[in-house]
Image (cartoon, helix red, strand yellow):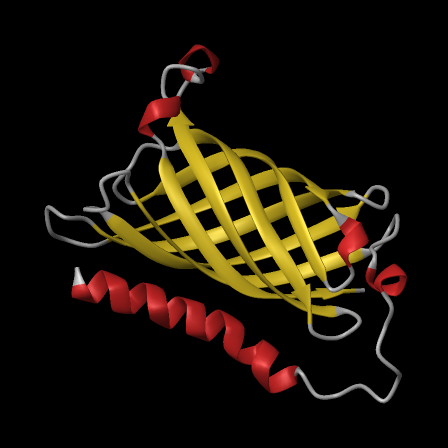
Length: 187
């Protein structure tokens, strides 16, 4: 368990270190909440470290993710995420896995530098020790703008796996919790 905990901490540190190094003071005055608010067509690139576990926290993993998103209006954003995970199951051994998911997130944009969001995701999970399968999930998080177009964020997801559409409801109770933290850029 100590190795799993340190792996998660290292992933989070690695994901947030560039934001700390890059966050130099801007020469422009501080922005107002209206300026930090995303607008239709603004794009976003995110880098994060992630970790997760089953519901009893005895089987966990850590990994890295990259995401690309675009705001459809001032609140809704579509996102595609690619994740690569290292898995160290409780039964021993190690494996690698990945996932490709799309998500739709709703942002509460009236709070200035702090921007909570929530949404849902859907995608594919694949790897060396598991059958390729579908994934659905619910997610929530918060972005904090350290500069006008640079933010740090944290997010929690609850994902469950299924092979066929009819299994979507049946497998909700056997999902996994995924935590991630990282940096993002608007352009």
